[in-house]
Picture (spheres, one colour):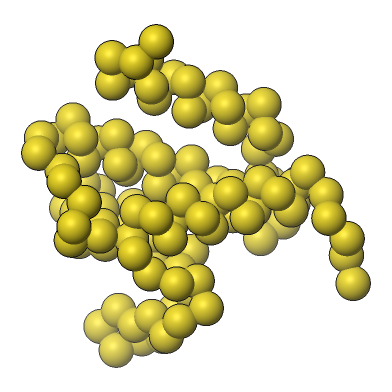
Length: 111
């Protein structure tokens, strides 16, 4: 059994972001067109379909008023997806995650 590591923390962060944005559990039964899949696969498929795909997996209670909001949600899910890569070596480190989050915040008018 593997112990805790920074890359495991990054993985957990990615899964948590996907859960928050989609309102789906990573361990639940997820189906798309009758095909069972993981939360990571669901998000990956949505990202591959572009903004329309992302809109289709977002939590219905999430307020996405503009295309910029939707694009930002897609950026967050793309980051989450990279954090949840199967191979730890393929995941960013937390400094990279922080840098991406700060860039998204600045793009949204944050400081």
